[in-house]
Image 1 (cartoon, one colour):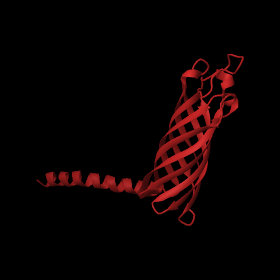
Image 2 (cartoon, rainbow, N blue to C red; image 1 turned 120 degrees about the vertical axis):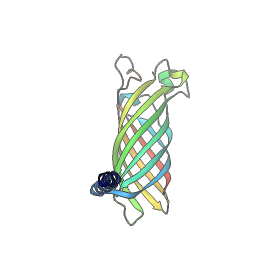
Image 3 (spheres, rainbow, N blue to C red; image 1 turned 90 degrees about the vertical axis):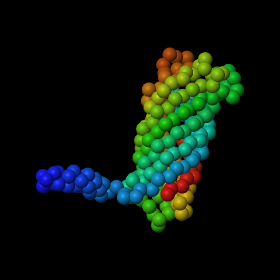
Image 4 (tube, helix red, strand yellow; image 1 turned 90 degrees about the horizontal axis):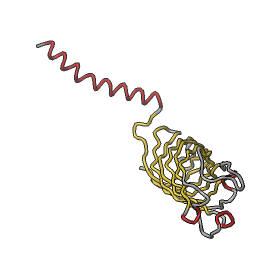
Length: 203
C-alpha cells in the first residue's frame, strides 16, 4: 500500500519537476515568460544585383510576417513575400514582362529598445524563393528554386500595440539557374537588394 502511494506521488511529482526544470532552463537562456506575438505587413521596392540584374529593373514587393520576441533583445520572424521585377524589353523583345519572386523566410533580428519606443536592429536568416518569368519572357528566363541568406538593417517605432518601421536588406542568392549571361551559356549570378516600409501590431 505504502509502495503504491509512493509510486503515485512520484508519478505526480515527475511532470511538476520537469516543468520547474524547463522554467529554470528558460530563465537561464533569458527567454521571456510571456513573449509578445504579432504580425506585420510590408510594402517596398527592390531589384536584383550582379549579372543577374543586368536586364532587370526596379520592382515592387509586398509581404507579411508572423513575429515574436522570445528574448529581450532578440526577435524571430516567419513570413511570405511576393515581388515583381520588371525585365527590360531589349532582353525579351516585349514590354511589360517581369520576373516574379515568391519567398518563404525565417529571420532572427536583434536590437535594444530605446525609451520604450525605438528599436534599431540588425539580423539575418534563411529563405527559399521560387522565381517565375511571365509568359512573354519564358523563352529567355527559366523558373527556378533558389536559396537566400539575407542581411537586414532597420528600425521600428512603437505606439502602444502598434508599430511602424523601415528596413533595408541584401540577400545572397544561391543555386540560381534563372538566366544565362547574354551571348554566353554561363549562368548569371547576383543578389537581391530591397527596401521596405512596415506596419504591424504586437500583443
